[in-house]
Image 1 (cartoon, rainbow, N blue to C red):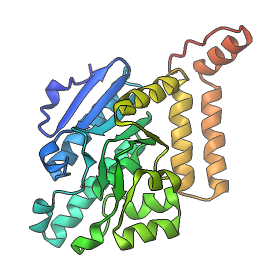
Image 2 (image 1 turned 135 degrees about the vertical axis):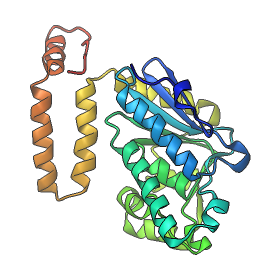
Image 3 (image 1 turned 45 degrees about the vertical axis):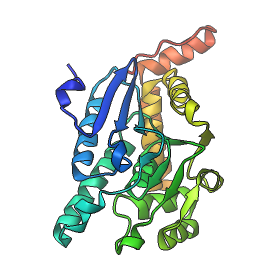
Length: 267
């Protein structure tokens, strides 16, 4: 039996499941959903539950209120940490972004306002990013005497290219949602009221397809980006072979030939 949200005892994150979708909401609106170590620990617990619950097919990650997805790290907490503590906390945050990125299920970032520093890094770890019209993005860490530490130096150039990523990271400037859309940092811009419904619509569309096909497509893209094209093609062929031996492949092809809707089981 998967853990229930109440069993997780979360203080800074809201976690609920409705049908095949799990909702993870950063819940510190008074501090614009700032990311403390406690928040990262709770995010880890919520996403591990979503990963391990076979009834969950996808996740929406968002922030409480209408001002911020997450406006970055908890500066008060960061100001007192030593170098050794800072490296540990950064590795902790990075592990959470890797968990989200490689969950095996689609995670949609529904960005509702500021996504700065660690907030931008959390969004970048998600499979797809959609944002409200008031969203703003940035990696302002250099203004505090530090640098991005939860994947910003790695995921940002992979998403928008090296030159644009370095400009954002080195200037620390904040960009509006239209610029974020233009450079490919976000997939879609929608009115704030439509943000969660649009995230749900995308997940429902994905969820109508074979879970193994979805999972292995995410794996192939993520692992392929880490190596050369030829290495990526080997990974793709291997995962394609696994899909082709699945019951879902038999069901999908049979349903297509019989002109009926497929009933995928995820095996």
